[in-house]
Image (cartoon, rainbow, N blue to C red):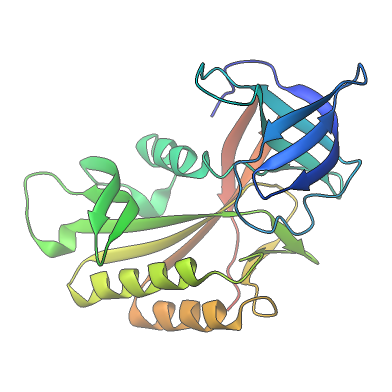
Length: 236
């Protein structure tokens, strides 16, 4: 993913009300930026951190800026959760995710399960057999604990529901994938954050035993682009 315009560097003053952040620009002006991340952003919201904003081009938007990334522990971290689905979809289309090649079509936000939408639905061409459908749920990961990327950064009942939906797809004969996109490049492995949400961690282990495939890829980030780099081992 390449940003349409050059990002504006600043310093984080504070993040508040989940979706708002005050950022000081180099000229001393403090602006309010939209924070497209409903998580706790544990480890990614320290006041004084270097951050990068994109200008909001939507004429109906109430705020002029969107918070895109920050520097944490010396690494750039992408915090905008509106990007991962597109990043993963583009990588699949470009053949960069070897585990998800060979499908004829890719659709996003498709209704399935019980009042849910799957992030990415892959289907093989000219067939209606269940085994030729692959349901891919994408999660954005920013939390780093030691050398591990971990998810979630707060208790997530919604995330647990998604695991149940994927297991239901397995029961119906489909392929199901839980895809973790780590929007930072300084982690050595991925693990569920059992100390934060033991229910989710237990659900992930159950899903893996049920046949849900687990994938984790990290990213290379610059103020100009975010690109998938390589796989991370998953520790359950």
